[in-house]
Amino acid sequence: MDGITAVEDIIKRVDIWDHNEVRYRQLSGGMTNHSYICHVRDKKYVLRIPGSGTDVFINRAHELSCAIAAAKAGASPDVLCVVAPEGAVVTPFIDGEVLHADTVVADDNRIAKIVAAVQQVHAKAVFEPVTHTFDLIRRYTQTARDVDAFFPYDFDWMCAIADKIEQAMERNNPPAVACHNDLFPENFIIDANGKLWILDWEYGGMNDPYFDLGDLAVEHPLTRKQEELVIQTYCGEVQPHRLYRILLHKLTADLRWSLWAMIQDRISKIDFDFYTYGLGRYARFRANYYHREFKTWLEGV
Image (tube, rainbow, N blue to C red):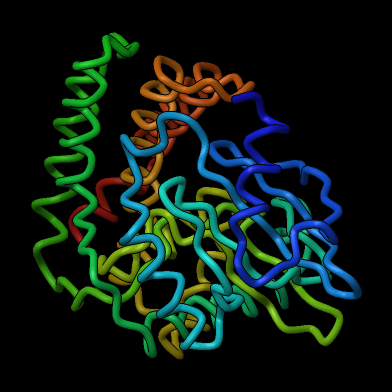
């Protein structure tokens, strides 16, 4: 079944629509799924269809439960319909500005707004799946080996650094909360009323809250002053040991997503240069390790 036929077949099975009245077009963006804006009479919706091979990483039942919980927490659009067996999801279309890294780092108020929305989920939602970042890195490593993915020459060294970070983080370990675990800038939309919405809960799970904040910091990327703003907003004050936790999780996020990218390079049919993307994240892991304050982060977390 080709792409157009597959979309139209799924639209016919969306039971909240009269499929004869649906007009649709594909939305840009997204590395692993195909999203469409669908016009049905005077209303607009988003239909998101999982990409081929994504089941290696994503449990769609877990994603659905996280999305529903995040919507109940007031941070994400409602799930209106799910089409099985594909796991396609229909949500309301949020008419607003999709954020980008440059538009976030240019505005401290937006950073604070993002952190407040993330904190809302952390405080109000409870997710079914559990995500332990370091276990996930080990699982991705094995999957990468299974599919004969690319590993850099110093990958074992990176794993040894991750082990040191894991051991250090056993100190002052916060309780797990409902984390998004993929705070890519395009997963945020600000609507016409100024409300910030968080989208796409594929990787959601109960995790260290500071992984979310570290992933946020590395995805945009923030200045040190802005990283301190993240902690100030989240904790009410700049707590150095929590700041260090964010800075260390910048490394764990890059290692995780590097592995993810190299696996995608082997299995994905989506037209995206996962290999180059993964190389860039490996490079940033090294750069953060060689930061002059890395030892301070490790000892002070």
